[in-house]
Image 1 (cartoon, rainbow, N blue to C red):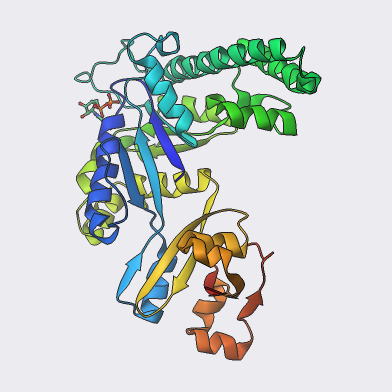
Image 2 (image 1 turned 180 degrees about the horizontal axis):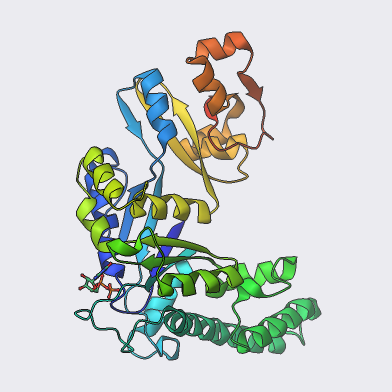
Length: 365
Ligand code: GDP
């Protein structure tokens, strides 16, 4: 599936955050026997109040959430793009990720050594992003060189080569591909996809702060927000240590803690929800007495594609789908009531599934 790579300098709290995500995975793993457990990957359920509501109405035997994959990419340091140490392996892992969660140290703690001697988020972000830009430069340089050789035999490569050169010039000004003006053209998109360019991926900046900074930003968080605004990126604020302690506690206990710090939603919940969204994913539901379940699809999937997530046979044999919008389902309480009210729609092969649709597929086997 699609995954989010967790990056950041050493000692900023990545492992602490990843441990919290892993604990959340393990707490839920009995319900997700189909998820294989890997040491550097956490497959975590996406919190979704709508599932709670559907469960109240349908009273199923079990409930399954959508999941999202986080990959721990530890060890990215200055010089990684030059292949120092294990640098290239980390960069390969980032290339395979579909979005990036960049953890930034915004807490002060004399007991935790900072690799560069002081807490300075803008500098830290710059160090990591420069490595990522240099990694894209290297792979694009190779590609451009190859294309310029192939051009003699294949003139159709011209536009792509020209675009590659423009992108290279942009990167060499230490700018990420996400700010490349022509990034949405067909040729640029093709290159970005083929090369799995790192700096084209969505980034979420995750400020790791202490408890007392959760409600009110400190100067470090403010600096990250300013930088993120220029990049059009999102910012989340969490206390990784606290999140690790939370996993496994009763929801009421967590709420009590959060309230005492003046916040309403746990940082882990925010990260999982925003992460899921940053991958361009949405959920549709199936609601039966055996199981109420959220299924993960890409925004834009059609009925047959959505059915294919349940089983490939469902996609091949798709005839039609019965669809109830989530709000209609909740307003009427049961499928039968929705049918009687006329809010159950019958949709064909071209229907684009909406977030929260309650679906029932009809198919040939
Ligand atoms: P990593 O190298 O980025 O994976 O960082 P770690 O997760 O190993 O954290 C480095 C150190 O910082 C550990 O001693 C953590 O306990 C500590 N740490 C992590 N998050 C916080 C935080 O929010 N506040 C404080 N004071 N310390 C933290």
